[in-house]
Image 1 (cartoon, rainbow, N blue to C red):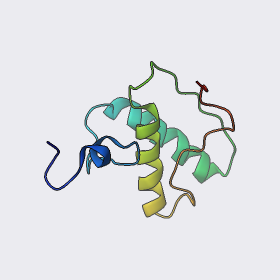
Image 2 (image 1 turned 60 degrees about the horizontal axis):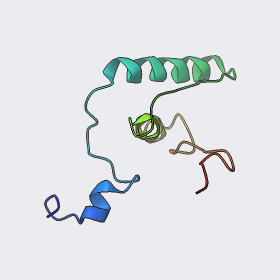
Image 3 (image 1 turned 45 degrees about the horizontal axis):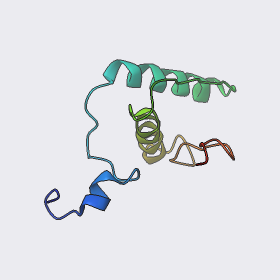
Image 4 (image 1 turned 90 degrees about the vertical axis):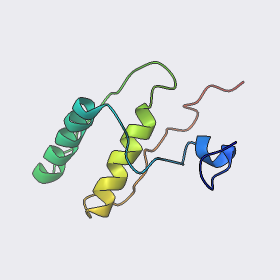
Length: 89
């Protein structure tokens, strides 16, 4: 069984996001503040986000970048991953 009109593969695919992400409001606000601050100041900056696998780090950042892309503040609405970043099995 899947969610109304969506297959299991679609629902659990990393690129499939709910319309609203629940939780992580404090973290979201801090990340947005960091990004907006650097965009407004036209300065570079680095942001390190850590946590256990599967806790939604990339999903949260992708959602924030998608929002900023819709607002016209960023060009690429996805979180880039460096070559070889993921463990190979």
